[in-house]
Length: 379
Image (tube, rainbow, N blue to C red):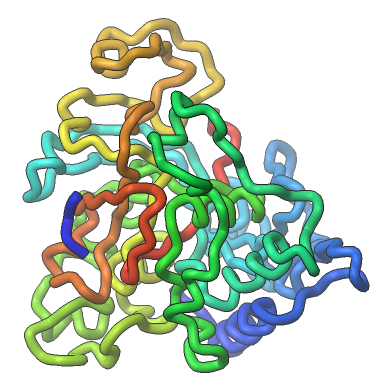
């Protein structure tokens, strides 16, 4: 799309793929009550150490949590957890200061340091099967999950409304234009609007990532250009990500690839395909000049630190803000940020710093999403 705008065992991979596939058509529900039962991938008996608490519906990944193990936890936080609603495995990203931006685009500079609190991020992009499960359980009236309803911003001056006409938040069947039953169930869902991606994230108890969270999960703290490092020649990247090359299908795929393909190109935290395949919606409004007004903190913190000397309070914004509401993204806009590049983009447009954008009601055939689970600020 144009810029407008680990180590895993084979057995575990096969199990995860099978469960995700099944989750698109059936569900581990209790009869017809739509009560979501724990995922078969979840270790519901795991005992978490003091000070480590996961929200309801999230559990350590079975067979992959041993407290005090360097491979399985970060200071007690499981390296991998599972979400009940969509059977999604999520990877832990520790709190850190990252250098955000600094790339070649005019909207990617200047580079600046941002402190990001810890969070979990979906191991891979949301698949067609997973989104179809959401569509069946949360949207269709004959099987509707009555515990959830989509957000309805009714006021034109609502910051999340952006003046769109009609019912932009309504979940549609548009994703089915690129889904072929049993043929690409495990490919990333695409042709979903930001509103639909946001509704899915809320249904699962998660959120869309901020740009800072997305970049932290994709590159870590070493300023690499791509999730795997700095290699950018197609002879190398054809094995690392699904992007457009001079040779047709040089990476093995004409369009999208399965969500757990290209294991050699995972990010420092083991997250799949944060470059290429489909670009990904973020929660932030897009502002091409935002990096000129640096914020130091993302996402918002509940810790009171007093007024800032620079950053958000100097950003031209109609609402007053203080440190408790500080964030990298602006409060207003008419386009939502998109990250990661896609199968339709050359490798240079799949860099970690690359920023794109589109209206939140747009359906694009090379844009999908993944979710994050923010955690209480690490002290």
